[in-house]
Amino acid sequence: MAVFLVRMNGLIKKIFKKKEIKEVTTEPPFFTKDVYNNLPYIIGDYTYGKPIVLHWGEKANLYIGKFCSIADNVTIFLGGNHRTDWVSTYPFNVLTDFFPEAGEITGHPSTKGDVIIGNDVWIGHGATILSGVKIGDGAVVGAGAVVTKDVLPYEIVAGNPAKHIKMRFNEEQVSKLLDIKWWDWPVDKIKLNVFLLTSSNLENFIENHTQCNSE
Image (cartoon, rainbow, N blue to C red):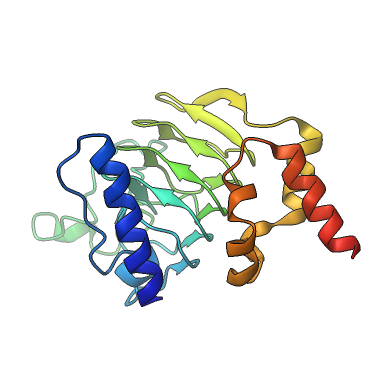
């Protein structure tokens, strides 16, 4: 792992140098699972980024797959929903120092459930993901998007609220990628296929993988 971080640090610095960006850091903890290793979140290997995760004791958890790219200032809500079905949305039962009479009232704040983010997902700068949302493998969330509904595998969404922009690949290609699940390969196999993974020739990747499986 240490060797991997050193190599990644060098690669990122080269990229940013070409773009005339003066400073970049991959100082540990770099991977998301190491940032939140003292919390019950389930986060896969090699996912990086430090999202702001907000909750107020609701029974909801965060699940993030492997190889996700999470930009700065991404916020994930595991709850915090005010009760729009009540007469007032005000959190009387939370502010019991001022309203002790509301101390036994429950159900506020509320949650719509776990946030589940698949593998190889790219979440852009400043995006917000609300509770109960599921984001499929290979999806892309645009910068500043507010995700209130589920995102399909390999779907690109953007805006407030986030809306469908396009699919990254056609239905057949998506199906094959979901069968391949390259993120579950052993790391050595991923390294051997890194040039295919970083190519826009998807059919070549699928064909090579099929050939490898048939041997």
